[in-house]
Image (cartoon, rainbow, N blue to C red; front, side, top):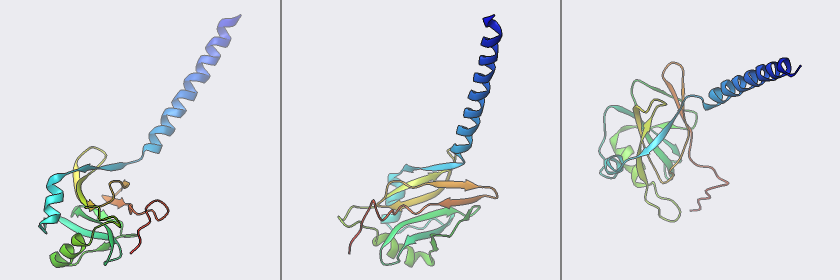
Length: 153
């Protein structure tokens, strides 16, 4: 009688697929992304400050890796980021954002998992991870990976 084993195997297969689906959905997490933006690039290059954001940088102040602006209704995880003190410091940091081969930095809009803009990005690095956590907390990972992007000055 093959029908009972087919039903049994189908049930196991269905359960296995459900488990895979739940695991993959959990692995996706609540991650945002960067959307390249010429407007944001121009904003930073012209040292214009948008007061809707709190600004942070990662790296050394003499050689920053990235500058971000996070909307004020979000709480930034400052593990690898330092707050920017005023527009003059922001302008200096933006001017210092050049790679070892003098690659010009570019701007991007940081969007949440639903695609809603929540911040801005300026860096020579084109990728990073942006993780959203409960309580409007956001963790923007540093884009610099020493083994992948050696910068020598």
